Length: 212
Image (cartoon, rainbow, N blue to C red; front, top):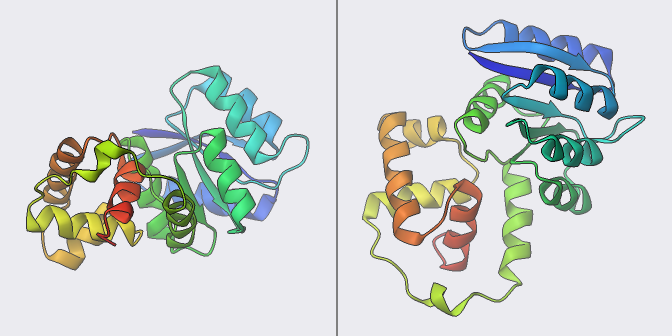
């Protein structure tokens, strides 16, 4: 069971999200917060696997709440769920330590899969957020060591391209006609070959090496 804390300043959104998560068999809402300070307190008390965090909230906004939650070091990962896709907010949320960034206009299944992905150690990103991060990274210098491109298999390359496009493992599996477990195996192999630790780093690497 994946334990989740929800943080949003709108009561209707909080109730809707809680109902959506509780309709599943593997997600459990262990706390609901109406501002960032409450979110930090709930994380400290409940130690959930994932905190789903809005960005614009009173008392303490989502960026500062994310930073505070990571400082607690209780093993909770933060997935941002917000209405905003502007550059400054994306940068601030990721720099604060959020491992995923989804928008509220996403389909319910995308959010559920995103929470599960975060709990598995992955980094789900809305394609608009992913594009922003990739563009920012492309302006930086590529380390000399990165000039050597490992010998990826055709399937690993294909999977990485879909990661850059912002697809989650379940969506990649459906697109390629393979199982989600096989997608994960290809990603694990690709991570080892290119020397990265997670989905975001893999997407940045793929973009730098023109695999997008």
